[in-house]
Amino acid sequence: MAANERIAVAKTYKIYIDGKFPRTESGRYFPLKDKRGKVLANVCRSSRKDFRNAVVAARKAQGAWAGASAYLRGQILYRIAEMLEGRSAQFVDELVLQGTTRARARREVETAIDRLIYYAGWSDKYQQVFSSVNPVASSHFNFSVLEPTGVVAIIAPDDSGLIGLVSNVAPAIVGGNTCVVLASETSPLSAVSFAEVLHASDVPAGVVNILTGFRSELVGQFASHMDVNAVAFAGLDRKVAGTVQSQAAENLKRVIARAGVDWMKSDAESPYFIRDTQEVKTTWHPIGT
Image (cartoon, rainbow, N blue to C red; front, side, top):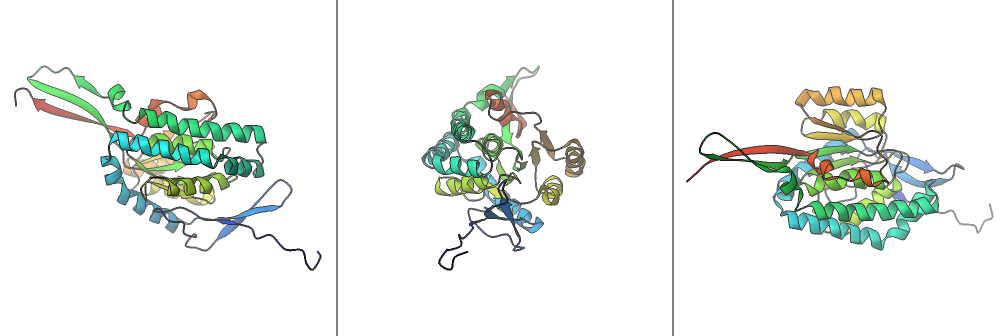
């Protein structure tokens, strides 16, 4: 190397907790390399303590977020889509760096933007579809309505850097849940950049928390933490998926397994994905009171 040839500084992609970008508390990171072995960036290797901190932030934010109007949540999702549209070239470049063709990368970013707008449109409509007035044999009104489950732990699919993450986060938060997300282990750059989009939009701190790191180290925490109400995962092998389900049973945590989904296709978006992280509340009210 020539004496005057400078060495490029590899960016360290941080995690996103409670509206801030801390480094992992353990100080660990791993180099993300391309197919030729070139280091693309340094990526934080999140610890169990980072996950616990993220759950605390998500729980703190959940009440206010659930209490926000459906209209406001829809507007915020639309704002995220606007911000992602404005930075689409950056996301395309990052996906290409991680091994995606430019044509597919462009299509993935466009699909992610459209998916956010899709769920923004459902924000004030899914209650009308899934709620009901129930017939009863007494002088009462009986209503069934949906309420958010609470804190949702999401293990994003590993084969998708952006669209898989967006497709799982959007239906969870539009329904009033907060979430802690484990990004793709092999393609994490877009997830951290997506956190920057969230930070620059109107999403309140703690509503979405994004961690990077090794699945083998963190999956058990996502499944077993006692203050997580639901765990959603995609792309886990059968053995790991079985472990998640058995550990989640310890506090009757809802398990949402999404296997075999092509996140680029239209059937990867549905109001039933919102329904997955909702609880049905039934209320009796006397007639004439």
